[in-house]
Length: 104
Image 1 (cartoon, rainbow, N blue to C red):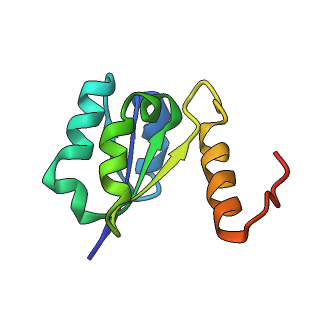
Image 2 (cartoon, helix red, strand yellow; image 1 turned 60 degrees about the vertical axis):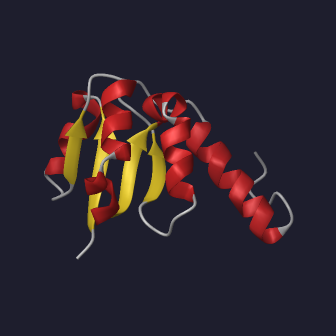
């Protein structure tokens, strides 16, 4: 059975534990890359990662985009959104629909 995980700094991920999600509290991009590249990452259907870390882990995230699981979803961190996650969603919607229907 697949799981859902959250990767980010401690303050950003601690609340997700109460929802029953597996959290990976990391201190920087090196640890986040290690989580993303570990064989354990393939046990997850979805991995949420903070936008700040995702910006530094683009290569490891790109490796997962070629496979069905895990889906990598960018979320705002404790300091708020950088707009990267919304931009990625907008690009994918535009590619699928053929038009920018989100109007960002």
